[in-house]
Length: 231
Ligand code: 4GX
Picture 1 (cartoon, protein in one colour):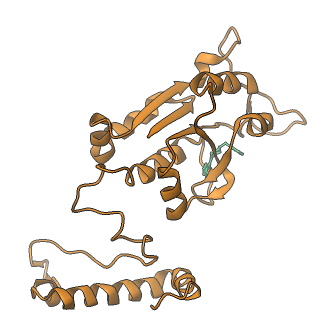
Picture 2: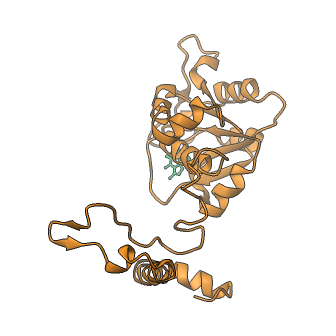
């Protein structure tokens, strides 16, 4: 998979050269191509924003640098071109999984009060939001999306980790995890987890998943019931 990113803050993406995603990039399991939108500004000062028509606070990203950067990064429109915005469709695990099935995605990042609407009309295939809050640019949202999508690329997660066994994939929140030592600050690991009885461990984990989901995310349980899944 190829992920291209268009941004005014290319250095921010160094954050992805760490940990599991950094390792996956080193191994070439997917590629990341970062384009600095400013490099495409035809303005003599490399300006990429201007005042909004109609007035109002803040600045809007001008269409020319964005349009030219998009055309240069994806001349044959092979990529699914995504604009990150609070107005977009909410990112879910199902949407992440679907995006991981694309061969190329492009993430277009707006700063300030957003980008000229004509870019969305002309060049963008989908608008995605990572949640109902407002960031200063799309870049952290893009990195969230890249991180979540990368987990589905074969080889990115170790064989012991899996995208199957965790929260949201089966529609439930995850059961609690424990590791050594067996006692810490007077708190013991639940006895069943050290019993060696795998059926009892699985049953205990299922119970804890159902319990925490009922407590914190009853909406998720409701969804499972409506899908006719026995929970
Ligand atoms: N999920 N932001 C986009 C610029 C902007 C402002 C107004 C359109 C309208 C965000 C999110 C997010 C901050 C990215 C504002 N674009 N992106 N940017 N929530 O908050 O994805």
